[in-house]
Structure formats: structure tokens, C-alpha cells
Amino acid sequence: MSNKGSAATPGRNVVVVGTQWGDEGKGKLVDWLTETAQGVVRFQGGHNAGHTLVINGVKTALHLIPSGIMRAGVKCYIGNGVVLSVGKLFEEIAGLEKAGVEVRSRLRVSEACPLILPFHAAIDIAREAAKVKAGTEKIGTTGRGIGPAYEDKIARRALRVQDLKYPERFATKLRELLDLHNHVLTTYLHSADMAWDDKIAPYMKDGAIQFEPVYAEAMQQAEQLKPMIADVSRELNEAHKTGANLLFEGAQGTLLDIDHGTYPFVTSSNCVAGNAAAGAGVGPQLLHYVLGITKAYCTRVGGGPFPTELDWETEGTPGWHMSTVGAEKGVTTGRSRRCGWFDAALLKRSAQVNGLSGLCITKLDVLDGLPELQLCVGYELDGERIDILPMGADEIARCRPIYETIPGWTETSVGVTRYEDLPANARHYLKRIEETTGVPIHVISTSPDRDHTILLHHPFHG
Image (tube, rainbow, N blue to C red):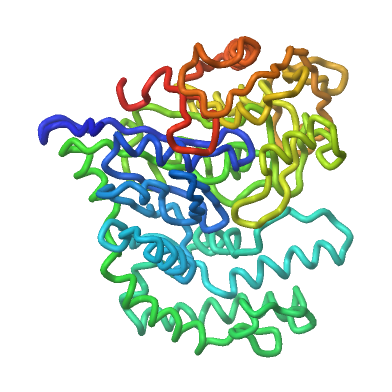
């Protein structure tokens, strides 16, 4: 089904973003759309992301490598906007190679990616522990060093992939970083008093990260990584000019965006579609279509406000139904996802900041069997009615959802591939989502399997 143009005809590019708090099912859609693409690009986040693909009943979890890797012949790119743990990257490569997927010749890693190193994870973990000790609410990070790595990037002191090619330069910069971060760890976060797991302990002595094990590991990894290091920005622009269709794969979700999410309960990067340009090194005019992925209900992992959250732990409740039928466990962390009703006011905010061209609704089948559904169409905030999610956690925490009741359906929607074969009430529910959010639904997913997808409008076909 390749739509690759001639050398004289530039390709068409699609951005896929999550519109809620992540875990919307982006991985399946990226894999499915890659049938029409020649390249797939990750442009932000780190290995705190988790995308699950189910192909012919076999489940594969990816954290750094773009989901397009499961399609033979497709090139995959890790853009400069990603913070990279080289060790985790090679763990993922090894798992894919064990499953018979060829990776190394198809994967290109930007030389401008900031590196995640052991002290970043140590700081991340120690900060969350300090919040618990002080009795304040945790941010809910994955403890993988993503935030501290982005801090080094913004402070203009990060070690980047390109530094791995120059051992002396790498060593000098590493010593400077260790001086700074070990001071924070030992004097402010009291790391010597903490019990460290076997992922951090080998690098540490008396609460401080040691130079030698970090440096030796990095130099060993550098030799394996060098064949994959590339000027990703240049390669993407050249691929576009010669007719390749490119798919830009977002991680996390819009409401975890550092600027537009439920701040401070957010991630450390921009998750919105516009960052595909900055995080990959292409001009914004090359982003032709933005597909927003949203569950047919809402979920959230970690702390922070969630206006439509339900009781998802009591058996027999709608929230429990979503949690159990939807198998709502985080791909990366294994944490249970909080569950709630679909929030159209939240989706309006996501549509606004992403410039959505169309929606893909995932996990519609999870709602099979619920006698009635509630659709959030706005909130009451400080005595006034509003119809769009406000900015920041403090205001959102005060929002009280305003619901519209919609009848459910008893028929199954699992595996349906034609819109007209969906239950009538399911079609009505989807229509109300379109009407209340103002965004057309172009794709519907009716199970995790690649082939269980209803296509109403193809993002790559204009």
C-alpha cells in the first residue's frame, strides 16, 4: 500500500499525538499507518514512554525505538528532541533482534540527542523520595532520569550523543557534571542515607556517582552506537524531497506537555504536534496532517488532577469495568491507570494546542456492555460554567464535570472493521464526541490488533 512519490514529488507527512495523559494507543496507530510511510520519527521524551503493539496476537512493548520498526524496510529516526539512555536503547534492540526484527541498519539516532546518565536517574529518584519524606505530593515521575536530563539540556551543560565520539571531551564534561550533581545528591538530597537498587548502586559510593563506571560504560556503548549516529535533520529533509512519506510519533500525551498540561504534574518536554518540527529538525510547513489519538474514555497514570475520574477499584462500577476490560496498566511502569469518563472539554484544549486535523478513537470496545455512558461537556469552576479545560493543575483541580448521559450498548464492537457494523448506540456516542469536540473522527480502533481498525479518512491521502 506504499504511497511513495517520485523523486520530483515531495512526500506527505503526518504527526501522531496523544490528546489525553498518554497511553492512548499511539503505538498501534503508528504501526498501522506505517504501511503508507517510509520513515517514522520520535521527536521528544525518553524511555519513560511506552507503546504496545499487538501483531497477529503477539505483544511487543517499545520505549525508545519508533513503532514503525515492526514494518520491514521502514527507516526509524530518533530526533534531537529525545533524551537518550544508550543502555536502554541497546536493551530494546536486543529484545527486537531476539524476536527476529532487524534494527541496526534501519535506525538513525540524532547526534544532538542529550544523554541520560546514571546520575540523572539517581536525582530523579531522590527528589521523589524527598517529597514523600516531607509529606508533599509526588510528581509521579518514572524515576528514569528524564526530567534531570532535560534540565541539563536547558542549562546548556548536557552531554550529547556527538560527545561519545570524542573520549577526552566526554571525560572533561562528565567530570564537571558529576561535581555539580553529586553535590546536589549528597548535600541536599542526602543520597548516602538512601537504599539504592541494583540499577544505581553499581555506580555509587557514599551517595555519590563515581566517574569510572559511568565513563567506561559510555565508551563501550559508543562503539556500538557510532554506526547509527546521524544528522537526522538533514536525512529527514532529504527523504521528504525525494518522495518519502514521514510519520512523526509523539510520546506521552498533550495534558503532560510541560507548557500546556496539568502543570506541575507533567513531563519535561513538549508533547504537542508543533514540537515535531523542533524535535526532529524539519520546518513546520512539512507537518501536513495532525492525528490526535484519544481513548473512548480517559485514563491517567501518576499524580495530578483528573476531573472525570471514577472509582476504578470497586468491582462492578463503570471505572472498574474500564480498568479491568481495558487492562489499564502502564506499559513502562506497570502502575495501574486511573480511569474516568470521556472529557470533551479536555479534548477541546488538545485540539486547540495541536491543530488537530482528525481524531482516532481507541478502545471503543472496552465500553461494550455498559448500560449508559457519561460524556463530560464542560465544567463548573468557581460558580461559572466553562467548556474548555483551564490551564494548570490548581484550576483544573477545582473543576466539577458537567455530564451528558448517553445510552450504552450490549452488542460487541470487538474487531469490527466497518463503521456501519458498529452498534447503533456506539455510532451515536462517536457522533456526540465529534459534535462536542469540534474535531472529525477519521479512524476508530476496535481492539489492540493491527487489523482491527475502521478507516473513515486516511491521513496520508490528503
